[in-house]
Length: 269
Image 1 (cartoon, one colour):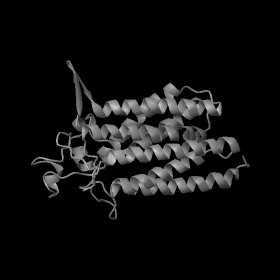
Image 2 (cartoon, rainbow, N blue to C red):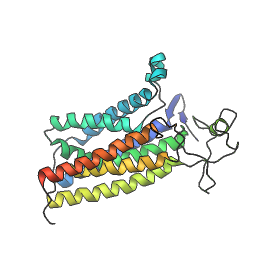
Image 3 (spheres, one colour):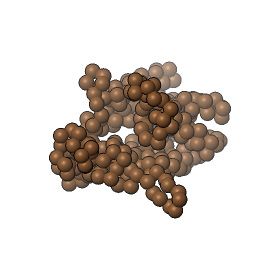
Image 4 (spheres, helix red, strand yellow):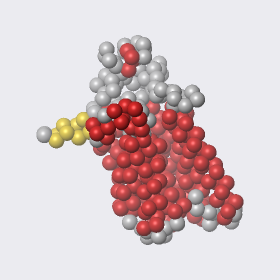
């Protein structure tokens, strides 16, 4: 694993590089969606502001998952480059998109619809950074041929203090490379959201459907991935991410039902 790339005196974190690549890909997807819908908006500003808000929300959410530890020594943790949570990024990005929708005079649900495919793909690519850096986002041991070990990761699997030893697993254990799974799932979710967006656009379906599908699909995906992750249980036998996933799924279903009942069914294509 390569947590950092050294170029002369410059040290770059591989996680940050992949997050930047994910944002660039999200920009092109967002711009293409604006173009097919005939919307005039500054995709660069939207991705930049939403990306920063997402990172801030992701970091804050992660810290508040262990509030006692955070408030005991907040400043070093606040500015650390390690530890981010997906649903914190969703919340931060959501708030930023609501602000940007008002700024660009775009209906809020339409803005969320357009941003959903871009968010799905950007997240999947960013997860590759977790894999390359070995930051501990991997899963439980596996004997599958694609299992991986992370001896030189930020959170190593091997060694006396490695995850394998801490959990009493064999020293040379291989684990599920869950970031790869999440990338593949993100590609599928992106494709579904893009096709749903095309359907919504062609049939004059109400705004909010794409975002509702995004909430449901990402919630289901993260809930299932957590089954083979090593995160601790904290809420009725669920991890924090699983509890948030349930909220995401329920919110998506409620939003879908609301927009269908409030704005009616779409016309036939």
